[in-house]
Length: 262
Image 1 (cartoon, helix red, strand yellow):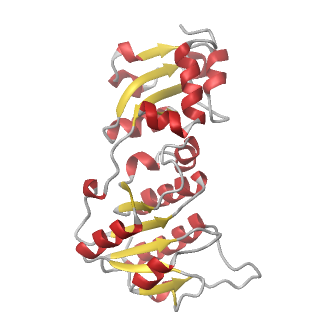
Image 2 (cartoon, rainbow, N blue to C red):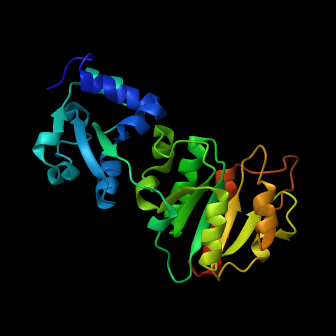
Image 3 (cartoon, rainbow, N blue to C red):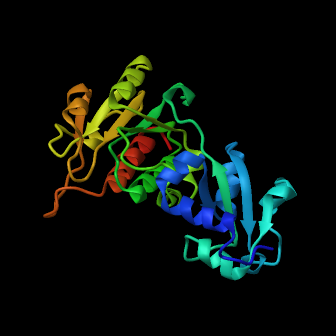
C-alpha cells in the first residue's frame, strides 16, 4: 500500500492534474471515479494504472470495473494519500491514469443523418465538459472543437462532462478543416449569432445539420458567419443579451432532437 505523499507516482498524479504541458508530454491524463473508469474502458481507452482507496468505497462491494483490469496495474493507497490526489469533493476511491486518444476528423464516424456540434475557440473547461454532457444526452454524432483554446483532458472538462468525454466522438481541428469536412459530408451549417436572421426553432434540423457555437465574449468569427447556411439566434427577453454557451448549445440541440422525434 502506498502511504507516503512523497511517493513518485502520487506526486506525478498531482502534476498531471495541474499541468496541461505534463499531460501532453507524458501522454497521460487523470480520471476519478468508477463510472468514469468504466466509460473509459467501454470506449477502448488504454488504462495505464489505477489507484484505489478501499476506505473510500461507498459500499463494501469491490467495484466491478476493477475486476476487468489486471492486478499489476492496481495499487492500494491510504486515505491520507487519496485525499491528496482526489479532485472531486465527493469521490468513490478510484483514480486512474489513462492514455489519450487521437482526435482527428478522420476518426469520426457519422450516421446517415448526422447532427454535429461545432465549438469555435471554446476557452472554459467547464463549458466544454457541459457541452459534452449535452451531446451524450442528445446522442449527437460528434463534437468538433475548432481553434481549440483549452485542454480536452483538463480535469474540469472530465468532471463537468461526467464521462461525456468518453461517450461522445470528439475531434480537434482548425475552422477551415472543419468546414471542408462538413461540406464533404453535405452537412448544413447553422451559425449561432446574436444578430442572427432567424430564430433557432424555425430551422429544419431533420436534415444533415451542424450548429456552430462561439465564445460568450466574442461570439463567432466572420469565417463561420460568412460560411453558414443560416445565422440563428435564441430570443432573449431580459436585459442580458445571451446565455452561457453550454446552455445555448443545449437549447438548440434539444430543439433539433425534438424535431427528429427524440
